[in-house]
Image: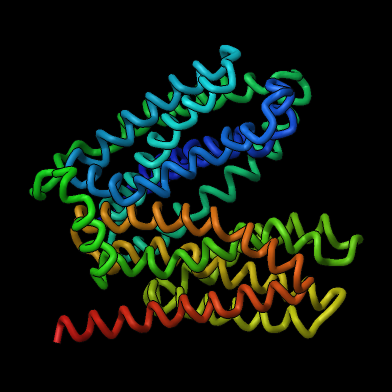
Length: 388
């Protein structure tokens, strides 16, 4: 089997477009605020409501992907997302804008749950770790691109809606591209979707040591990553602040696509997650006993260790789940727990920083890393017991 890398990169491009549903607001938040000067605290909903949809409906999205078919769902979601971005360019009242962002939250879920399912199905077994690691970078890279190109565009035109119009065009392009390159395939036989079974389906997914393991291990990463990217630059010496803010996410991406990908191929994705958490835990401990340049090095090492976790967690989905239905449910669970982690992480760490200062990074990150290792070791024992 040969991996169709053109289709893999087309799906990754769709992932970038999905992540831009966050970055097209978050990166230009100050400029967006000028559109509704009297919004007050409600303005935060324009950003947060997209992630809130994932908290509630992430696993449900995975159940639907398994039944509707990932190709059909991702192309439809991209087309609908383009239409929503066009509507957002019309100068909406704040309430209508928030409603459009709720719709965007559902469409975002459809894309980010369908994407890894399709990638895992298209990639040859030897290339699955590499392809899933590539997919895992879409969020960080989309924010970097939006900051590099989108923010200057908004400053040059003085209108946030110009960026949203560009986003609509990119979404439309991604839909057309995937419609052309993805093979047509019907979803396999799965039980019909019954809303009354949602609670039992959630219990089944999260208690399954194969379907639930990637997401349960991933939630600790999401609780740490955005939190440290937000708060660590403000804790280093002022002359290193910009350098730290710029290079920490790059260290994570480079580690994920470089050594992390090789480790996943050689040792397996789950073992690579455990190694990544071990490196990150050591870096968190180093943070507590270093200062100056050495402290910056500890921050970069922490980011690199989490980069291993990022890519390998996605690679664990096909490694542990041979069927498309299992992969869809695992991806949905990752979307749900990922949104929970990113929502809770920054406020919790900010509260610790207020009370403990810089040592809060160690007190917060190291135990969560150890929890990530413990969860995967426990799930591995459960898998071994079930298969013995």
